[in-house]
Image (tube, each protein chain N blue to C red):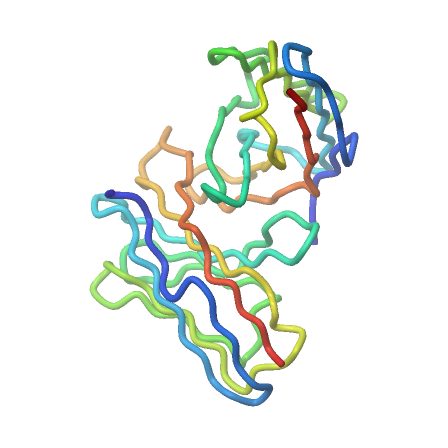
Length: 115
Length: 112
């Protein structure tokens, strides 16, 4: 399967702990996006990379959140000092990144539960 | 915050019937996309319609776009139990950077 993969699929952590999620995009895609989805809502944009450059961050992304995409390949999303409000599904998507290729391909997500 | 609102929030139909769901959005867009989400396969792209298009078809899907009313509709014809899922519209505002702004979704249940 050459789709977008995310690890882990589920993460349970105690409040105050740090967590890190990984996303492996489709190999030829140079754009990578992170979204967050809470129960009963649509996904909300968090941040976007073109190759290794992080080009936009949502105001939802507080200073406890950091994302990287070293060498423009996989990406990691780290949440420090987790809070119960961080409990959500974290989705990664990738796209080709040239004009006309607007479809985004989503991974299965990482479900985070903060207790 | 969500840009789009979808209507209805939930829809229950029988196999073979058509399902129509609507999406309204607030700002000007470059394109509007529809995605399906179920527990088995995550979010899957269904169809994209550009701001200069009014209607588009893909298999059993028909999408319309009315930019003057800032609204779109998704019609699924001859529905199947496998169409049971949540459906989201998502808008992209800026050419070149395609951040998607999702609606709140319509939960579709298709009964055999």
